[in-house]
Image (cartoon, rainbow, N blue to C red; front, top):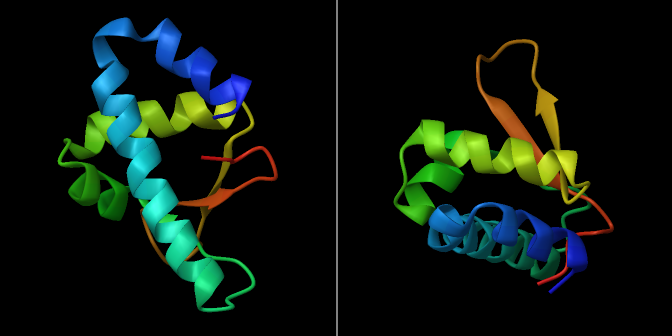
Length: 93
């Protein structure tokens, strides 16, 4: 696990399990897309929230922290309200 992900986990001791669930959900999505040979996969906040069994607000909060650490990046699509997330080269599980 990268140091950046570990930093996010430690700074949120109460949220440690939630952070782990979000990271696990991201890993599942991105590993599935890697095996499908898609060049870049974006996943919605709602999808991560559903996969990690968290509220969309908690999932978004964790994703924003991961973005600040450089683990994921957010993408706002013009025609949609949702934020979408892409992994960075720092995303390692």
